[in-house]
Length: 309
Image (tube, rainbow, N blue to C red; front, side, top):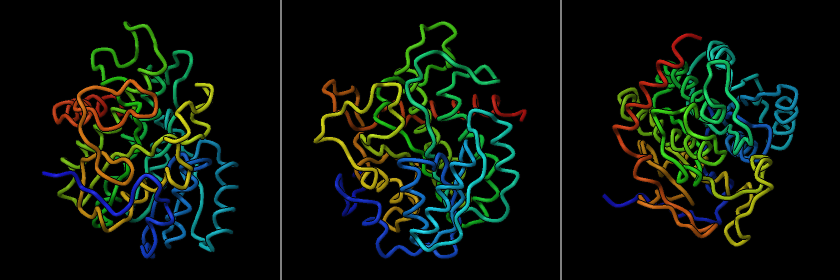
């Protein structure tokens, strides 16, 4: 089956993708929406008429963003709520507070390349906990809300960083391997792709689909531990361009009913069997990130890890 392509590409912006898309009556959650891609994703959805809740670690910052988005979009149905994805009790509280249907969930929040090994209260490596495990628990706890929406979409924000590591099931938390910031980041971003695969497999009967997205190389606070964005300028994107594929998957009729896939530059990506070594040219999705057995195993592991809170 050929890859799905759209009329949009590398240079397309979120506003261009959302042109003529009407989200009136739709309700959306965007995690990590205090800066960068999260803010632009929320703005584009709100500008199309959606009610948008920002899931944020720092509520004061989230409220300021919500106020600014209300001002620039004219949409008053934008608010913020506390959500710390590394803390499963916080995730559970956020999900319990949600009432009614949820049409769009954008799992955007993330941390990258933490210089030292950190673990959350469960003992999980922090990038795995924040980028994947918290989002896994969030979607599971919001399943009823997603199912009741009829045709809900989940967007799982990944990265070309997933090409640095598969999920190492026998050592998720670096208890045997020497800790490495980039392979830990890579493992967590592979996990976000596998989430899209298994969620679609298990929940498509409820009308819920999930796709993973590589937004591209965008200079944001995400690179604060890497010395800034190092991708050559010709391969970099603006925030507006980076958010375009997220909103495509969240709202465009062009991908209605599509799930379990990985997109970049507004098209479905090619499967690759090795990572390009030249900085900036790495792209595609690793075969291990779309593997059904890996996805099912990760879902089982995550279900056990998140069973208590």
